[in-house]
Length: 212
Image (tube, rainbow, N blue to C red; front, top):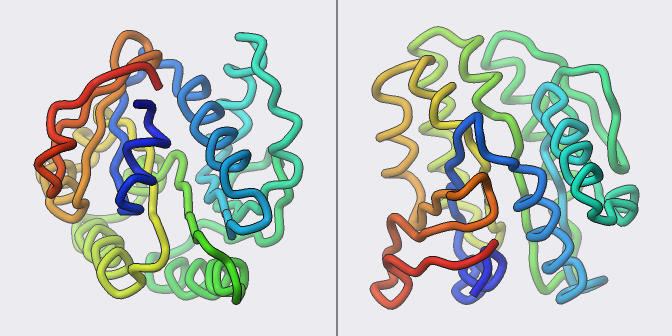
C-alpha cells in the first residue's frame, strides 16, 4: 500500500512528517498523481503552497525523472513566496495571523466548496515556514484552527506535509499538538521513498509501512 492507498482507504486527514533530508517532491508527486488518476473529475483538489514549497518539490521530482506536467491543471492557493507553480487561483500575502486566516479561509472556500465532487482534498506544503513567523499565541491558534477544520469540515481531506525539524524550532509543543489534531500520522523514511504509519485511529493501519 502506498500513501494514497492508506489515506484514501478511510478518506481521513493525515499529517505527513518528513525531515530536511527527505526528497519530499518524490512522495508528493506520486501521491498527487495517484489520486488524480483515481478520481479525475470526481475530485475537488487544491494544493496550498506556503512560501514556494511547491516549486521546490516539483523541481526535486523533475530531477528524478517524474512527469509533473499534470500539476499545471491543479488548483493552487499561494501563501507568500514569489515562484508560481500549478494553476494559481488565489494569492494570500503573509500577514498577522487573524488577517491571514480570514483571507486563506475565503480563498479555500471558493475552491473546495464545489458541489457534486466525490472527493475534496486540500494538500498543504511548507506550512512550517509560516509557523516560524507567528508568535506563540498565533502559532497555537493556527494549530487549533487546523484541528477545527478537520473536525468541522469532515468532507474535506486535509493532507499536510510538514518538516518536523522546522516545526520543532518554532515551538517545542507545536509538533505534539499537531499530532493530536490528526487522526493519522505518517512519517517518510529512506530519503522519502518509503513511509510508516506512526499513528492511526484505525487499528488495522497502525504500523503499516511501504513504498510511497
